[in-house]
Image 1 (cartoon, helix red, strand yellow):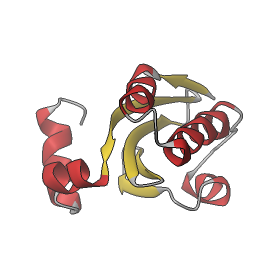
Image 2 (cartoon, rainbow, N blue to C red):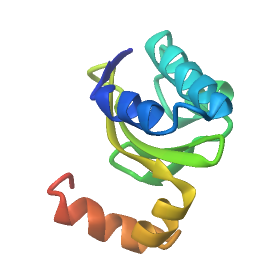
Image 3 (tube, rainbow, N blue to C red):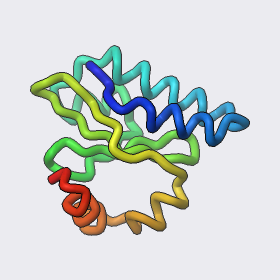
Length: 112
């Protein structure tokens, strides 16, 4: 699967270069996605039990140590796009941990 917008994860790694656990978690996520042949959310959960489907259009959050990243997975085109990445605190401040707020954010970003 092709992973687009990896720059967001590279930026997260640079910002947290002393956090070895985060860097390893980011590298593992990238590797898992790039070698994936996912066809549905069940496939994703088998590889990444930390995946949380947050919208029916293929948006997922993944846990990365104490950080989170939102990824759009387009199964038909076999690509994944990094939409957002940040700390869990930034996630809580922005998304409030609820799907309604996430949907509103996605609409405001013109992603849905």
